[in-house]
Length: 386
Ligand SMILES: [Zn+2]
Image 1: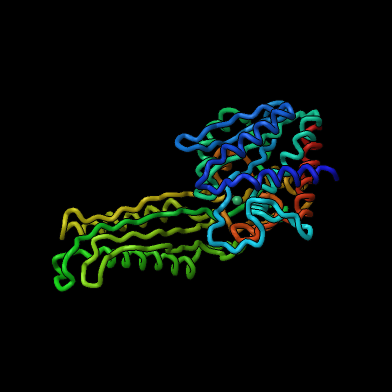
Image 2: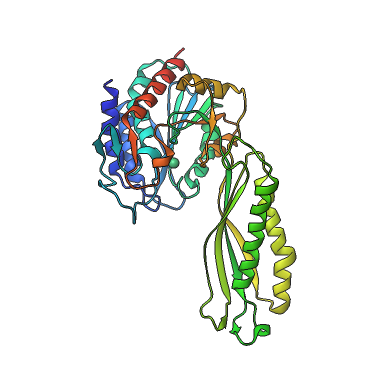
């Protein structure tokens, strides 16, 4: 199959752009825009509101309902501090695998899609194939959220959205949702020998952390449970914490990050609300009574809506046919899928490579996976032309 040669060349080009989330992706977007133009496909480049980044959307075929959206994110996670045996931003072809940052997550998928653009343009499509490439997925799905109004306005209800995150080409129909929060506690500094003269921000943070941990224990013990997921319940984690300045000073400041990942059937916003309620009703009044400037704030800096499966839905069976699979699965990691689902678009996650190799040194995608993804694209092209 010669298309795998094109895929390899394109993937090699894509890996060469260091699109770590904190950097610009404009050079890569420009590359894709020019590539599409070469094949007669016009791309909409939607520049980010506040950064040197852009989303790209293109439609091949008539812009009518019933199309398929192929969705990928263009950013990658950092390589800092990782032990790479090959240069991460130069693709290496070795033992049937392509190595490099983003090969699995998820430039491999984008490369296959681009390699099939000439197939799509020649296929006399009766329904459209849309390409939707975003920025800043890895730092909270920020790019796709800027893309949503454009999609809503310009993409008539598709039959299916394929999020090409690495699932080893299995069809996944659900994942958990996620909230990422930062809690900041402002206390009152004092000499440690005079506890009544201060409010210890570290102690307040500890109280909140144990409250979060209680929610975690409760969720593990009492559910709700969904055995499709592992673990089968909503999970919580406390991330970095910092605060205090010396053992003999009552700390005036402490902050910590935390997150929870909730089952699609669980009301995630209600959990965030319960925590906020506890701050507003219990903690803040208590510390303010001592010193009016004391405070606790909790800000959400990322929210990933869950992907909910729709058993027996047309989108799922269509995806299974394209992937030539009998059964769908669920995944443990989050994607942009929930955002598309909130537009009432049917969504599956299906892409080449294994998530187990993503975000790690020596990330790779097997060539056989890219070939399987190519066959998916071939069948898609045929399905949209009939
Ligand atoms: Zn990804």
